[in-house]
Image (cartoon, rainbow, N blue to C red; front, side, top):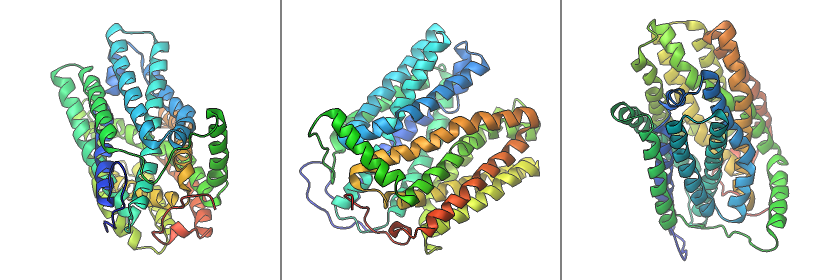
Length: 430
């Protein structure tokens, strides 16, 4: 990756290398804080007195919160600034996480858990879109001459490392203290991130517009984002693709834990279930490292996405039908590598199609489509597992991913500039 030439800025990073470092630090902190509770969240909710139905319903309210607030918080990032959106996210997520601990201590009623879960979803939506938009704008402004695929690939590596460490640390802390302590640690890490972002993260290459009324600005940017997001065919096709695949990845990850225990033959071998998080984290690291190599194998980014998507269909289908513990374990590694390698390529392709002024909102809308797909796919696939078993549910997931491939093909037919080259992302509506 070329560092490019540094551009002067009154505050914040002044070179591409520094911008990337700040991005990776914030990404590591976010993932570490989030993953601290991934391995114990369901146990935590059950320990608070919720039934299984209520525990998973609370998770559904979290996902619904992300759907509701994705675009509004993207508008905040595009009007008030990406830095301000990130700072709001750290505070909101820290407070709502600590609220979870309070509800756990008093064994609160379910409706309070539902509200807290929606607030946690709100906190995450302040991050989505804003950080990625900040990175692309700052790199453009500081003269970056490398490929975004490599930068996003490094982000995948950092995410995997943080996920591996956070998942392990959360379980270790809970085992030696209590289930609530990892949540408290997560809230503290988020407050540290607030301080770091306040010092290191400044809007570079992007000036928030504060002219006119707030509602007028919101209407203007939402209209422009609809035009330069959904109104741009390749962006629209990728959003529809996310609608099909958004819930499959989440379901496949969480369902692997009981599925592996079933294949292993010991329902209490929890260390086997813990392998899932470790394997996926390792795949994130390797996938991030190989993303630039995968990209160079293809002339077009959409060709790489089509290939990884097709292989993901094959992989999920084999997980469904093989029925052997060790074989499925190997297939999980392959599936994780495919997912991790495709993500930076997709990010680079999408960012190259979005003007700077609408970037955070459009990226948030793309994230909302994935979350919306998750709201429908997760309970549907879970129902298939209840009725027919985990194998058929993975086969159904493979079918959903297969349905997304025609939309990648349609995007490829558009021959967008970002499909073939590392051209700078558009900075203003044409």
